[in-house]
Amino acid sequence: DIQMTQSPSSLSASVGDRVTITCRASQNIRIFLSWYQKKPGEAPKLLISTASSLQSGVPSRFSGRGSGTEFTLTISSLQPEDFATYYCQQSFTTRWTFGQGTKVEIK
Amino acid sequence: QVQLVQSGAEVKKPGASVKVSCRVSGYTLSDLSMHWVRQAPEKGLEWIGSFDPEDGETIYAQKFQGRVNMTEDTSTDTASMVLSSLTSEDTAVYYCATAPPPVLSLDYWGQGTLVTISS
Image (cartoon, rainbow over all chains, first blue to last red; front, side, top):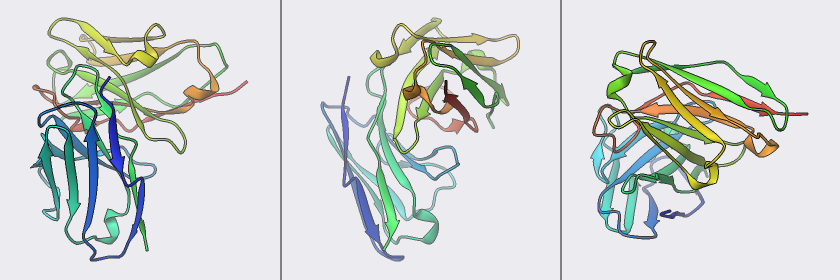
């Protein structure tokens, strides 16, 4: 199975900060990479698909980049509602895998 | 707009099996590939497997091979997952999730079903 590794595992940031999360795949997954936001007690929410396609209704402060084995999710100006855990997920192979998550906490 | 409504919380004993159901509205289940994902307490998201309606095949994460079974009832637009030989490690919230084809990400999610394994 393809292993997805996120870094950092957690970070502390302030409202207005620029935040970048990295996701690395153990092999080339082209652009078959999605990002999700997960808050306690809620279902995950899809933010970005195919590495950089922002989903309808997702604020433009979220952006995704990358291809192959290295990808990033950037929040350009962190808002109070963005404090959550973020997961990457590959769909290159028929057996999908998630990264371990990055928890974004309030500094 | 696809909506997924899951069955209610379950409490099971170790060694038992559990069935979680997911009813689809706003789309035809036979046109969707349903995926199942879980999150154990204080853990990350874990992909369990998926059902491909085009060929009727299921694909499971290796970790669950041999004790998970995913099915679909197109007459009721309900997808189901049965997990057997339960242990405390299976205590988690289980989600069904899908998207219209081609399914490259999970756009729509059920509300989650808490499964608790306790003796």
